[in-house]
Image (cartoon, rainbow, N blue to C red; front, side, top):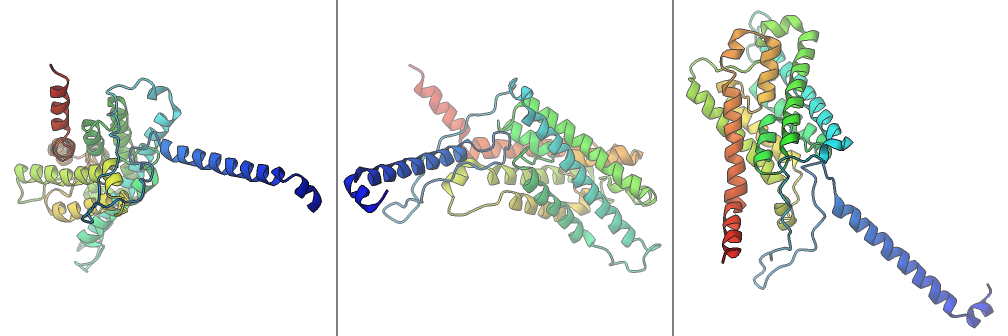
Length: 334
């Protein structure tokens, strides 16, 4: 079409511009819808980005529009029919396997490096600080890798806490715990297969009460340590906080990994730090010595109690779930 034709038909240019504008709006709406849908099976997946921050008259941050996500059903029969459910279970298994392989290998390596019969340098090896970094760093890496697939629990206590907070269904929680325990056994089995002599000689990375500490001290350390971890998980992955405090960007795996690191620094001298029943169970199964089983109950009861306290505190006290439920009950009565 030449210039003269365009003058004779000015509506052609207008029609083309309208078509381009319609196409642009359609693409924008489609992208917005994709963001809104998010990742269904990743419990750590973030919601859509909130609008720009609004400030009140005094400069304070105004409350954002937020819709509370519905609690997970106790038994979700539909999720059992989806491949994403089984993909998440596989992700939990592999993540826990890798976690136990790296961390138990670090513990055994440290024990060998500080053994006076093997090494004259009593201060050699990575030390307690290095062990804490190994556990915290691996949690950071693995949660980052698996958050969008399974939620990156890698710990039955975390799964239990999220179940009590109604973030996962009962079926998913049970399957996750089974996958985590099996992955822990396989991870410790790989360490034993590759370094059997050192594995048996240096205790297989099994958790035990250290000399000088009684059962109460060990149980208290496991309860408080797991409370710190699960409370951090619930806070870092709280969608309401992400919507309200979007001006403070938070990468969820980072504070979770730091929580594991700090708890290990405090409790390695007491129990060797469990705070993860799968970690303690897998090491005890593969090591197989009686001492590892004598105190195994501490590394289950303590973490589960700590996770329950953290879930109650975050969901019912800070989240005011009990107050909201009571208010709803009052408003619906006559």
